[in-house]
Image (cartoon, rainbow, N blue to C red):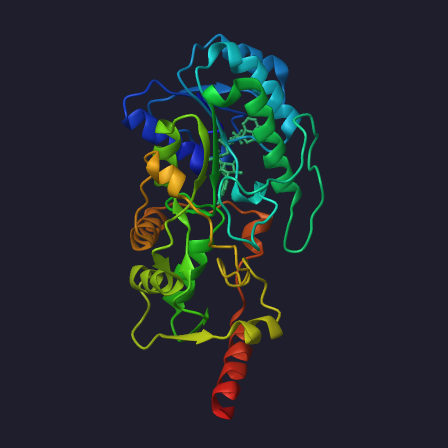
Amino acid sequence: MVLGGSWFLGRTVAETAVQGGWHVTVFRRGRPESGAAPDGVEVVHGHYGDPMAMRRLTERGPFDLVVDNLAYTPRETLAAAQVLEPVAARYVVVSSVSAYEGWPTQPLTEDSPTLPCSATAGPEPGYNGDPAPTTYGFGKAGCEVAVLETFGRERAVIARPGVILGPGEYVGRTAWWLNRMRRGGNVVAPQPADRAIQPVDVRDVASFVLSAPPGTFNVTGDGSDTFADFIHACREAAPAPDGTEVHWVHPRILLAHHVKQWTGLPLWRTHAGAWAVDSSRARAAGLTTRPIVETVRDTAAWLADGGHLVASDRASELGITPEEEAAILAGHRRVLRAR
Ligand SMILES: NC(=O)c1ccc[n+]([C@@H]2O[C@H](COP(=O)([O-])OP(=O)(O)OC[C@H]3O[C@@H](n4cnc5c(N)ncnc54)[C@H](OP(=O)(O)O)[C@@H]3O)[C@@H](O)[C@H]2O)c1
């Protein structure tokens, strides 16, 4: 049973499960703009927050596995978990590294403290700080509590992915860089080029959640890719025209030009903990992650094949304009000349 399964991670979980020979049911509201569930699944329409819809779902059981992609509001997740508990052997709650108190400022393991949030909290619990915590993170932490309380440590899987990329990535982070490379010319990229980054491919998250044993797991890249690997992969996959030049600009200059972290230059973040999430526990439990070059190449192929981004507020926040980029480059060159 995949709760939410037509868009990005949920869809990939459903698709991977079908390929693996599972009998898959997808639960969603059925909004056309959320895309189509993959071939080979049964679709049940309903709203996650509607107890009656969740109750009807139990008639489809018993389920070997529930993968919950809809866990944002703890009390909804608590209700869903309680209704499904008698008919589900195992329950995966897709949480996030945002559930940690220390994200993105500190290195994290699964034992790092999570944000305080009760299993009965309503929508958007907690508060938004700068850069964190977020109501999203508080909500995820509360949803984790809800699933743990209901299924216990023996039957609950808490998956905490970092940023997920790959085919279907509707936010448009990779797409922005691919488009930028396709335009060519002088491209601004954030120093240090050799900073290790940990995006995780959606297909690797999907495979892991389908096979993970009970427990709590960070699901991130292993840190063997760098920002330069990502940028060069985008350059190749776009492909960028001849003569394209990438300029690695100091963060101080980017910040002086008010480039927003995370969105202004997608994936750029200076905070020490942003890419310091330990995923060794998940790896010991079977997580394997592919190199970022493969993720970028396959995302470009998905876009070329008609894959489309979802128009959302998040997508419109992405990127810098050509004028902003030119001003940053001028500042960068002034600093180089002054040396
Ligand atoms: N993307 C990332 O980088 C990232 C990182 C960490 C964690 N995560 C987590 O990954 C999970 C999956 O996210 P995703 O964005 O990839 O989405 P997804 O699960 O692929 O797509 C969302 C699905 O949920 C359905 N849906 C939405 N609201 C619903 C509701 N109230 N009731 C029933 N169905 C509903 C949508 O279809 P309908 O509109 O038809 O209902 C759609 O099928 C989320 O929990 C997210 O927090 C994502």
